Image (cartoon, rainbow, N blue to C red):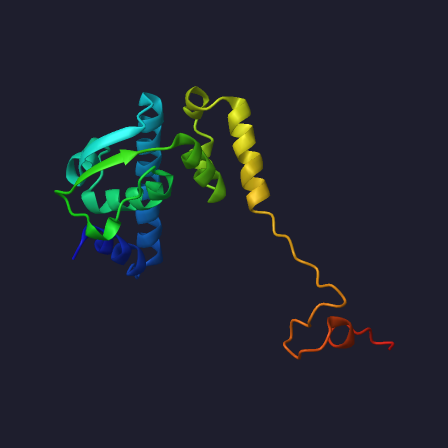
Length: 168
């Protein structure tokens, strides 16, 4: 069984709520420390085996897979997590703007409010990214025109079917 599969099973097979909560809290603390270190050192490229990188962040390789799962969408080249084992050589090329965007998108306030971001991205750039996240998450409903086909699939015009007012 691969490391990523072990990570998924750890998340899914927790029977006890208290144990699960404790596991998640310890993971989130390790994740925060890892991001603090990366941002502090302004490391946008990390190289090594999964085991070496996990040890560098004081994580077990299985827990490090959770970190990789989270950061994977912020890398310039995504990793195939299913194929990784402890001895796999990996290179993480982190796109900091994408990372900040993704942290905002998943509402990880404990990560996007880290003071280390001040040295990485200017306040103006962070404001632009926040606005972009807000714009991208806005839901717009397309209005059905009166003469368009009815979305119910009847084949009638909307105004003659579901768009008909009750008084008619």
